[in-house]
Image 1 (tube, helix red, strand yellow):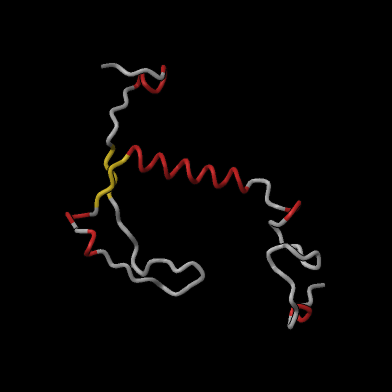
Image 2 (cartoon, helix red, strand yellow):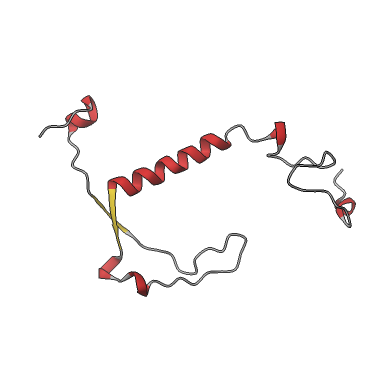
Length: 103
């Protein structure tokens, strides 16, 4: 049974340093896919920034972006960001198959 009252006026460290409470993701119970997930996200972001040039729509200047936020757990943007990607690398079919480039 879960009794949340037991945590009132208690000095238990919720970061997993106390043995009275071991949250998911701490110690031996840590998520085994955490490092793989972080590495995958970093790789995707690196590929997106390397392969594309990102522009704002209709020649909008960066100073004109609405940077207001909505209140919440992660403070998301109030208005969605629209960015237009343009492919900047010249890749041919043989580059993909053989890993070579033709000059």
